[in-house]
Length: 255
Image (tube, rainbow, N blue to C red; front, side, top):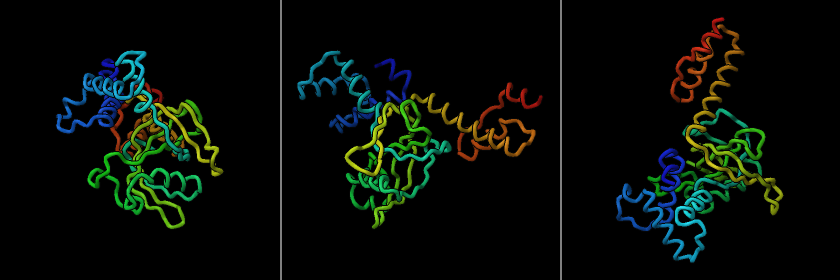
């Protein structure tokens, strides 16, 4: 666990922080002191004692299993619409009108006060520290092994007919482990379980998408311009970092 937290700070360090936030009631302790493996193990030990849980793998093993199941894996209903231009932290709006997606947003928003279903911004400033989330299946096909996106609802207006206008904030990529259709409804809403990705894998996915878009633009224009120029144009449009020129790409483009 210590190695995972050190090597994968955002994934496992973030998951341990979520675990502590979800299970700690010690509000008077400084966060820096709270967010440690030692404190997480103490919480896990308390949970085992209070719930008379069986400890087959020791405190560290049980903590690993719990965090993996509840904070690294993520299960939620799926909105499916392929779009590989979606990137983290770039909010966008959608209109939900299909019956299955009307139900999705109704169920996702149900635990929150009515004002947030009527258009009030969902933010910590407005008292919401854990925004509603679901899975955006933005790649085809929707199946095990495919990448998908976890999105937060930043704003939602549910109309009288059940349709909804939503503003979404993509927060991280995951890899789908399982997809299934809800059999107790006839609207074909899918549920998925995914496992969150390491930071490097998420960065690589988005960079590959940028390269793909840039090459498509390059082919469409048919101009004798190095591909990295188009890559940087797309990166700028997305508000991402510029890519340094790749010598091998420049060599091939100049031949």
